[in-house]
Image (cartoon, rainbow, N blue to C red; front, side):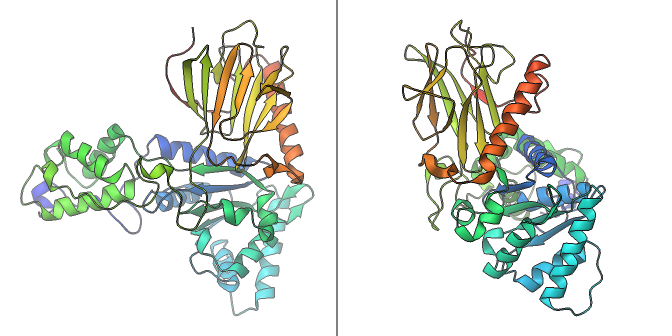
Length: 427
């Protein structure tokens, strides 16, 4: 179908370069909040994971463009990147016009730049796509750069992006310089069915179509969502194919192709393990029950989850046996920690009273008469935090941050967006 026949003046779905229009949706907005939080965090290092065509590149480029108005930003593709190429790409995007230099000269130039910028209160940001495909020597230099400090402040903010879970890579002994700075990992989420329709119509309108419903009716948008599992890059490609093959408008559902999806894109794939042996991507879940009845299920897709009697908690338990602010889950890299907040009646994991406890899959937490089941198949060993020097510091910081905010009068001030919740709120 010609563009004009669909009421279009420009190609609405682009697979390379800058998109015609940037269409925001809930998963992307959550990712933006995560990236801002990582930059402002004391440790300043985060990981963004998502399957191929999940929108990582569009997201990271948009964030880099926005952030570059405040600080120096470099965004490089790590696929096949060696040490020399990494240093040259970073320095070039940080504004250096380079002549031929040795690796040592390039490394020293970059170190001086990072230290100077951080000393002035503006630590640079380096974003690396396809981190899992970097040359080992480049990863070694990245670890060296991650150790740079100005007084007590790290001299480089780092965001690492990958199509695969990076758990195995980060846990390797050679990556300790990066592992100790990792404060959180973000797993991209696909568009919902309604968001897919909004996404398609926004792009069609940006291309000049005044009546997008006549090109892609609602049932076709639903078919595109199902065929793509909601991942924007796949939506774009399927929409391009449908427009190219259709002879006239509107496009019909049977004209939508159903390709093989990358791993982690569908409900069935969510429980599979990647070919490289890395652990699967997925946020932990907590299930609240009372006398065997499920009251609430929550997905922990943010760093902290506060539990207590007050209605301001993320997980509110209306019981006289539960303290106003009773306990808190905190994600530390691949691990999840449960902390008791000096509750009156205590917090118990598998019938043992705890103050701090790294959680395992299927652990049972008792708070008053209520039970909370912790579900995270990735959580296989409690020793994941042992010997990690930053863990105690991070724990104390989270505790002091939360207690200080609670002392000011409730959790409304906590910088934690709402969690995804299913089930009825407990009465």
